[in-house]
Length: 110
Image (cartoon, rainbow, N blue to C red; front, side, top):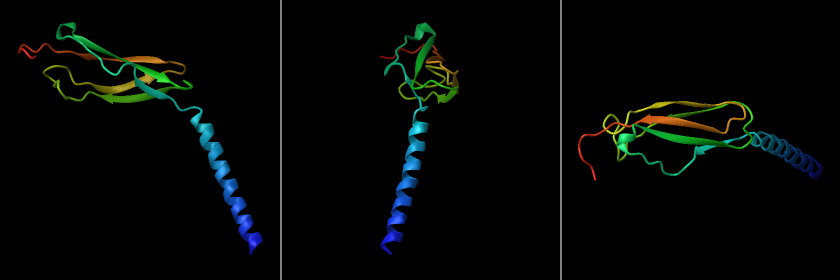
């Protein structure tokens, strides 16, 4: 009985080691995509906001990220043009950007 339990424990440990090795291997190729800054600022008369995006990590292989604008203090159709899409990073590419059209609101806002 003890021999059977010991064999089962060894098989379980070996299985966990295989899973951990596979996880470590796949983690080597995981990249992070993030905004290049925490805050982006634009005046209405500039006409466009450029949002820089950066890719960190192995940068091996192509990568795509979907995005969509969200209205908070600025409103789509009033302050900016709603946009959604996909940003593509080629193999080895570290930088990309999204351009959002800024609309001129004739009403004054503080």
